[in-house]
Length: 357
Image (cartoon, rainbow, N blue to C red):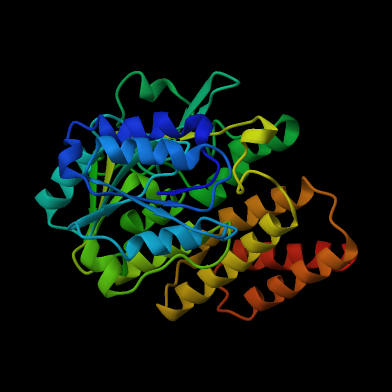
């Protein structure tokens, strides 16, 4: 877990680890403090004094993003399995136990569940999108999903997105014989029903990974503040030899969307770096899919390119900034181009950036 100036919500996050039904004594907790200037260090040392399984690393200089602390933390892993947690979110009480039992039951490389997207200030909860027929029980099945029906798009745009465009991007829900536990033996085979898990947002913190998969393959987070999770996860998926399990019927994570300006994380403040790093991460993801000769790269990248357009529109970007964005888009266009929508999106972005720059 990386943390920077997280004092406001840190105790709630740490308590969600301490209170795991799995038993804190069975969990190695590695936390990297990215040179916080608030009371984060004191809080971490307090928990460390109470719980021997806590291992705290205090960096002397701020690294500017969560990717370096996460990569540093991976160097200290001793356990057989790895999970991630952000410093203002929480695991559900049985998250570690559920995921641990399932990854061992299936003897797979990755097992993952669903998350709830919480907006505390608005008292709104959304559930994570699934490409499969819904299998969550009450109260979770009453929530709107965070990509389609619960999308933040409003008015005419919202109507068109929810009723037309989303079906081109995501398709209709897939109904499998077992919609509760979907096991993918080899994602590189690109079976239609199984490749659909690539439509799910990366949410790398809803997952448990076999440590050997990550450490022996030296899978790292790239140095971007947005989309680093996408690239980490894609590489983990492609390197998997024992399969991937999606628990469509289990919520394991509370993803908190803080709306107050002072509480926004680095990935929720829309600035030039966020917009530029997002494009860089999509270019890296495009190159990664080309490296593994994935024919369905559209499944992953179409929705992210649409999201980038929304990010770009929400900020008044300068001509020089738009020129830099255009360079990144041109690099993406040099990769393999699969699918009509993907090509249209790249050309559309390139056109609007050409006009604006």
